[in-house]
Structures are given as C-alpha cells and as structure tokens.
Image 1 (cartoon, helix red, strand yellow):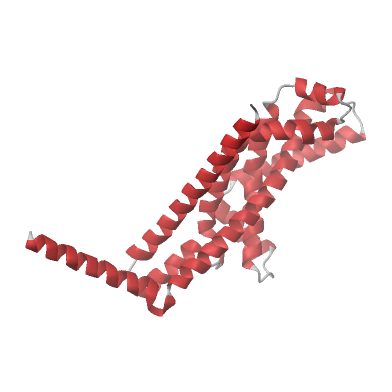
Image 2 (tube, helix red, strand yellow):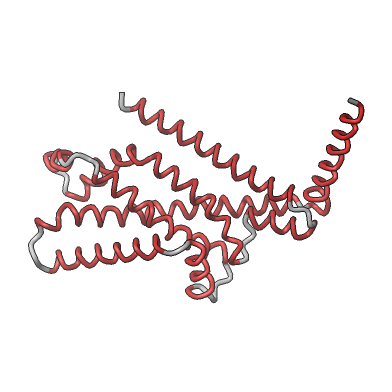
Length: 249
C-alpha cells in the first residue's frame, strides 16, 4: 500500500512539473488564451456571414424551385435562372472541396496582399459555412406547407414579405438543431486556421508543444477546451429550443 501511495505521489509530482513547464513557465498559457480568442472571433464572425449568405442562397434556390415553372419566359426569368445557376455552382464548388484548401486559396491567392489573416479566415470559413447553411435553410423552407404562402398573400403580402415574415420564422424552428450542429462543426473546423499562420487555439497548443517537447499536456488542454465549448453551446441551443417550443403553446 505504501509503495502504491509513493507511485501516486511521484505521478502527481510529474503532472505538476509538466503543467508548470507547459503553462506557467514563461507565461505559455497566454498562447492558449490568445488562441481561444481568435478561434471564437473567427467562429462567430464566420457563422454570421454563413447565415446571411446561406439564407440568401436558400431563398433564391427554393423560390426558383417553387415558381420557375409558372414564370413566363423573359428577362425576369432569365435573370432568375442565372442567379439559380450561380448558386448551384457555388454550392457544388464549396461543398466539393476541402475547407483547408479553400482557406489556403483565399490567403495565398485571392487575398495574397492582405496582412489581416484573421479577416481572410473569417471570409473563407463564412463562405464555406454559407453553402451548408443554404441547404439546411432550403430544406426548412421546402418543408413548410404551401398553404402558408397562400395565407400570406391573402393578408396582402407579396412573395418577399411572405417569405421573410411567415416562412423563414417557421423554417427556423424546424432547422435550429441542424444550424446548431453546423455552428459546432464550424467551431471545430477553425482548428485548421494555423495553415495560414493564424494563432488559433490549436496553433497555440502546438506552439507550446514545440517549445517544451511535451505534447501531452498542451494537446489535452486544447481538446478539453474544444469539448467544453461544444457542451456549452449545445446547452444554450437546447434552452433556445425549449423556449421556442413553449412559445408555440
């Protein structure tokens, strides 16, 4: 029993020394906190861009699917068809290529003269997220009963107002879990931001690992922080879902 206790004490002492080496010494913990700040900044800004872009694309795609057959041939239908085609190309390209490749193209080619790597990452992840949000929102819009459009028109709303005030709010309730999942996926996808020299959370842990040659503590810390963030945001979404359900009663 005494030998077991001594082994535990030796192990705890080694863990303490490893913790001090990786986080306390030379204030290496600042790599984690500054990386976490960049990760959250990129995620929140990118998801905002993704939601706005996704809603626009989803409205164009779903509107085309619902009204294209009834539209007369002419300039209006040609423009609508062109917009729908552009949206299809956007969805195909973005969903068909890895996000890390898109990030590197944005950083090294499109915005090669920019020194604001965080802004480039926000745009890259936002455009990537918009493609997935678009299909999520489109599925929500298509799931709404067509009678809701007729109800909106009976109230004097045109197509745009009907979509914005009647269809989108109902679709949002249906797709909230999928949108929350997209946000969580985006949060974890930002871990590749280090490919363009951004000191995100993952890069912060990697910098510590390279300095101390002790991979266990910084990498486990990074994994735990991601896990805590995911659990926290999942809890927030579950509370929002309950409120939406209660508001329907």
